[in-house]
Length: 123
Image 1 (cartoon, helix red, strand yellow):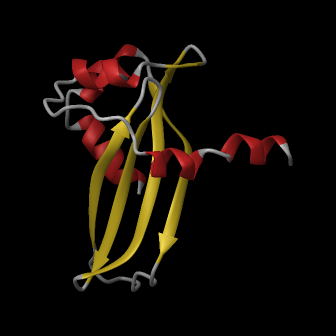
Image 2 (cartoon, one colour; image 1 turned 30 degrees about the vertical axis):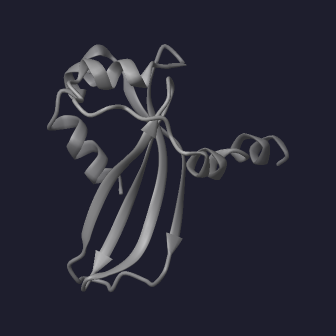
Image 3 (cartoon, helix red, strand yellow; image 1 turned 60 degrees about the vertical axis):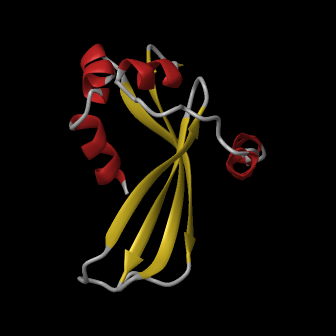
């Protein structure tokens, strides 16, 4: 899952606007839903779709398909940090040349990640 995200960063203007400015990518949480296992050593396709962004985070999903069937979907909340602080994700996207409208994440996506910090606090 990480490889496709870093490939996008290094092959786009995101690299110039993040890594080369001393920022590093963080992945505070991800959730995976498996319908069926991916068959070992068999080719599969992975599609990355942006589900929205707010000031701190970008939310996207990765869809894993094998033999024309969806096997799994991963939901990811990611961002960039510098000096122990989350950087403005919308500003990074705009500076990196994103031409499509940057939409806010859906309530469904936000709710999926809503209790993550509470779970950690209670452990």
